[in-house]
Structure formats: C-alpha cells, structure tokens
Length: 166
Image (tube, rainbow, N blue to C red; front, top):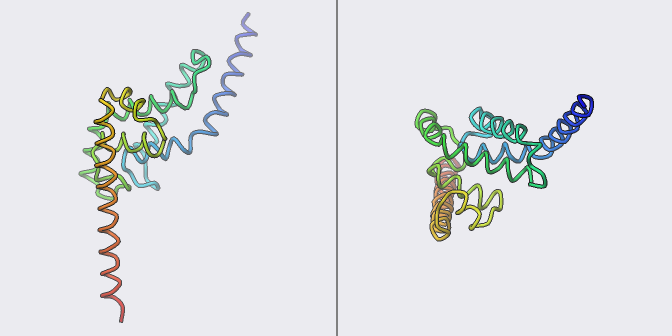
C-alpha cells in the first residue's frame, strides 16, 4: 500500500512540475501586472505566485478534472484581492511601478483578468462578487485611463525630443 502511495505521489509531483513549467511564466507576468511592480523587480508578484502555486499543489489530488491553471489563477486573484492594501502602500513608497500602477487594485484585477487572462465578464463578476455591468464599467474606465496616460507620456517624450534637437 505504501509503495503505491509513493508512486502516486511521485506521479502527482511530476504532473505538477510539468504544469508549473508551462504556466509559471504567464502567471508571473499576470501577478506582476496585478502588483504594478516593474518586470525586472517584482518580489511581491513572486511571493503572490509562489503562495498560489503552493495552494494548488496542496489541492492537486483533489482537482479531478478541473483546470489547474484556472484554479491557480483564481487563487492568485483571491490572494491579491485580500492583500491589495499591501500593494497600495508599496506604490506610495516606490514610484517606479509598472504599466498599470495608476489603477486601483480592483481596476488592475479586472483589467488583468479580462484583458490579459481573457476571463469572461460573467466569470470575473462572479469571482469578485460584482454585477457584470459594474465589471464592464470599471474595465472600460481603467483602459481609458491607461490609454490617456500612455498618450500623455508619448506627447511629453515628443516635446522633449523636439527641444533637444539642434
């Protein structure tokens, strides 16, 4: 009996390793977007992902047909939502953030789930406990804000180039 359990545990470990090898890069990028850290310095995103993967591993045997990527993404989102105030405090201390740094944690979560991960509005709304219309409005406002900021940065850069040109 023990030998069979050991074989099964090794098989689960190999399955999990294969899952992590295929999914970790994309999930780390999603976590980095959520925490609004720069891609080259993202310790909070790494911690968030490691904790989410640990939970998935602990529940690996019980997944039975569930998509492990989906379960890990849900865990990642839930952990971020519970700890979002930590990420907001970090943003005030270090202004060298990522692309979505100007968004609130809720806006970042919705934008990442909807646009980066491709989660349907209904699923996003259900996961966050919000009406679908609210998710749609928050996503539209957040995307508009990021676009406007990006456009402003490009205009400032163009002006600086024009001034620097001889």
